[in-house]
Image 1 (cartoon, rainbow, N blue to C red):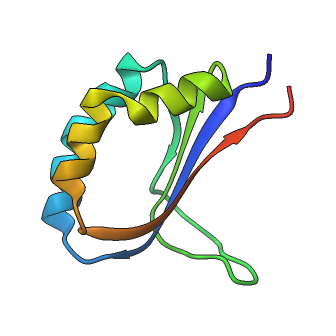
Image 2: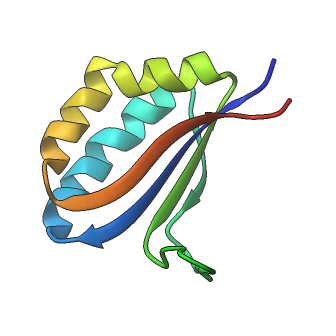
Length: 97
């Protein structure tokens, strides 16, 4: 079964304190949903129309598990804390096996 991945790239961070509050809630929610953080921040080299800001990559055992973790009550609470503190490109993708 192909794995699922959540990919998030911040375009802008307008409220670092909201991002910090989100991180405190999101990390345990992701772990509870079976997610494993592969990339969080770190160095970025962007090409073409790429964004050289904070990037997060989380792996799940399946696409469905990644979607369910995003929809969980615990993660929804994290999103409330984040509010409009960042502008980001967030997507869930299915691996190729």
